Amino acid sequence: MTLPWAALPDLASRRVGGSVLWANDELFAERENLIRPTEPVFQPATFGHKGQIYDGWETRRRRKPGEDQAVVRLGLPGVIRGVVVDTAFFTGNYPPFGTIEAAAVEGHPSPAELSTMDWTQLVPRAPLAGDTKNPFQVTDPARYTHVRLTIHPDGGVARLRVHGEPVADPRFLDLSSLDLAALENGAAITGCSNMFYSSPANLISPGFAAVMGEGWETARRRDDGNDWVSVRLAAPGVPRLAELDTSHFKGNAPGWATLTGRAADGTWTPLLDRVRLQPDTRHRYPLPEAPELTDVRLDIYPDGGMARLRLPGGLTEAGRAAFVLRWFNTLPATQATAVLKAAGLPDPDTAKTVNNRPVTTLPAFGI
Image 1 (cartoon, rainbow, N blue to C red):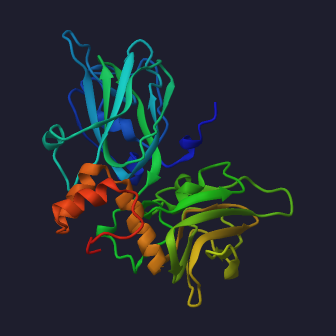
Image 2: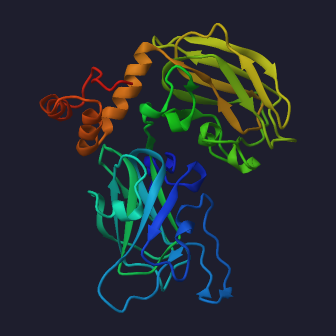
């Protein structure tokens, strides 16, 4: 079965800044394993002082009624489209049921404070199979910052994947100077020619690539073509610089690259003529005459691997409005109300604005 949402970024991954803030029990295996970016592994008959070592989160056997829980702060807050509860290698010790909830909170609450907040059920109590990736589609359109996994009554889960679309908070950004191609700012991969070795979403992920596997790498071409990837920018904007990073790619970096941009009317404009690339190098190219763009396409010749693509620039007036409205219109009602009250909007206007979403004009945010 094909799950389109499974190709979306994992908002909870440690690689993008996720954290398992709390679990009520982790006697057999640590909660932090839930969000490791790598696939689970298992080595039979490998025992520690608490028993068989598992690459996952495992709680003790319950002797009283109840359930176990773990709370994850998303590295990339956003709209959740699907969740995978992966019970890989847990066979006689997996939980038979699981529930997923989410919360949208301001600031940096402690686990104790989170326990008192309102949680929205995304996946009602559902059966889980052992040693299986258990997928659950999510239809809630709101932006969330935290998720809570409840297992009934106990057991082990190898990984929790929270796939979705990042939605950045404009209050923490300078919209006149940001990376237009950054995943954390809301950019997205819209197509690519090949992703044999690794996902093109790595190209626009936060931070530097630590190893080759954290970039985008294609298979070796045996024809006269070339590979490419297209990116929808965080919002309409004007890039001022292009950074093409081949870090860690040494014998498999592309030889050359071009960059083109798409305007709002659909026309494509050359941004960067064919340039020679060096292995294991961050290449920077000023773009002094770039127009307003909505998308870019990177072509590499003929094939190979790229660690990162960065496009520092600024949002246009239309881009700024689209960026802020996307964030505000996806906030749960309680958080949207808190945001407007903090901005000084009177209560009657606050209630009217929140209830009439999606709005098409900017409220008085002071952003």
